[in-house]
Amino acid sequence: MKKILLFASGSGTNVENIMAYFKNKAVNTAFLVLVNNPEAKVIEKARKNAVPVVIFDRNMLNDGAVEKIMRDFNPDLIVLAGFLWKLPETLVDLFENKIINIHPALLPKYGGKGMYGKHVHQAVLDNKEQETGITIHFVNANYDEGNVIFQATTPLEYPTTVEAIAEAVQQLEYCHFPEVIENLLKPF
Image (cartoon, rainbow, N blue to C red; front, side):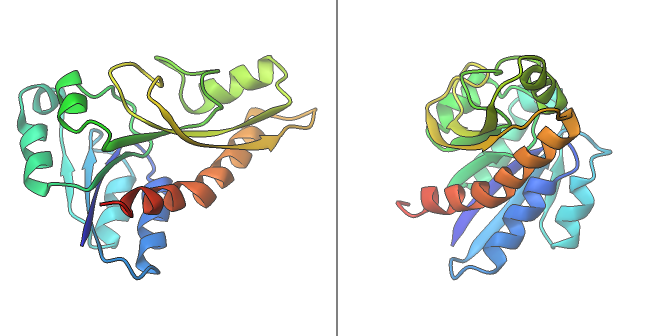
């Protein structure tokens, strides 16, 4: 059994996609979803898939409660899927090379604090980039600076919109994120 711990903050489309992907695979998986937003739609999506959910706040993240949950679950891989908070360095160190994140741009461009979702896509549009894409990387102590695992690109044609860029990037996420997760689980 492979255990995947998913951190999320919002709608949960990537979480739902990852769960659906592994339902069709021979590998037996168990999921746990940790959510920092009690209003997040990901909660309903996880529960609909009979996946346990833990809602936490900053105090729980910083006082060791989340660390205990993580240790007790003992994940093979920790996936940040639309999770907007920076993990404490103690957790990053404790689970070194077991935490991955997906970023909606081709890092190192458009990374760092505050660079998520539409903020990234707006910056790509403002700079008239000829392509954009996704970066899946290991998490380290700094925003979006961990070692790159995988990148995929999509060309941009102008005129375009932030919404069109977001849709193209989301399709890359849906296509590649679960496959990368599966490949990372193989050595364990």
